[in-house]
Image 1 (cartoon, rainbow, N blue to C red):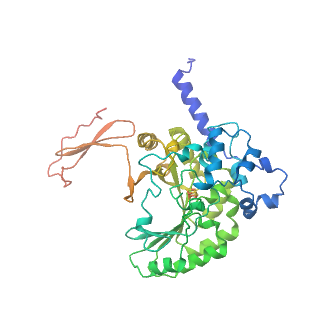
Image 2: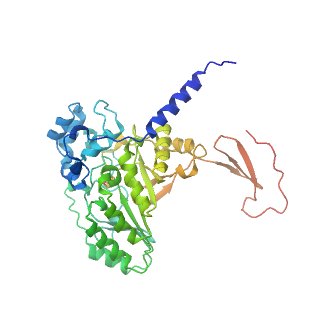
Image 3: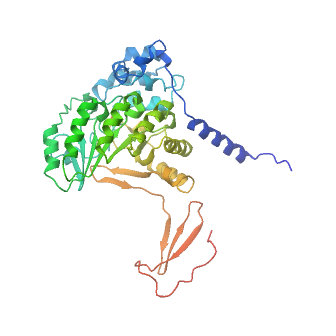
Length: 411
Ligand code: SF4
């Protein structure tokens, strides 16, 4: 019997088709730089040298800049500089003011509006810094800041007080002092290199740091936090991967927010890192009109798995000064987590966290699944909202007698 698709069926089909389209791998191509030789285009140093960094160059490429963006670009050098690699720029849709790529890297006037609860150092890093460039907030691990430069600058960056040096922070890491502190603190077993972006260093300079850290007997585990595979996949050369693989166990956390960032170039770059045996995780920031939609987020997380990357965290956007226009709500974050858990592969489901304002560390934020813990049972719901029971005493001890558990689900 022929059935006419219901409105709901049509809406589901449209949603599925949107997700499929977002998950397709595409290359942005040369776009505005079609006359540049292949050898230059694929050279990461060429890409860095030709970044878009000022109003004249961005207006030439994108005459559709809005008044808010134009004002933002003019003010960027006093807050957080603008820099966009040509490769990444080609991902922007100039015809769409709400393009999710555009929102992440093109400054806006709203960045100059600071809400009373916003801060310049929302995670309290400076107050947990025993030596310049080192943050020791958790007992067994440290954050090792190596540089204040990135390949491109994210408009919501939690470290915008120092990256790009637009505010005159004058960041000067002292590698010898940082390494010396780690060497004489045996409780530290895990070092995260970040910044700024450590992969902006030459292979030699990065290897110098990794080899010195690896030589410390109590360092079990090294990590690098980087957005370069997304902004500048050309940097992930076979030589870099061959160098990195000598320093295992070494994990890499990338930072990607939207499925359109996961291009064929990015997939290939991540494949090279994975082939070097480097476990890859992703950290996303929940951003308004970028990825605060359950369908977009699900497509992104599933596409990360296709790139051999395990989604690790979704961060509630930190209370960084001038970020209100990009901040999605915690409520929406919880809603998205609810749409993920049980609805897709467990490996695709990251942990949603708030980095507690002022320096309290990452706190997991979850939808509520436990409804009650009574005298003899835990009552909980599953991803479909069906209610179940599990026999257990309120204090967690095993029950002397089996509880009378209903066999039917309490929907
Ligand atoms: S890449 Fe990381 S450190 Fe650099 S601007 Fe973006 S969020 Fe900040």
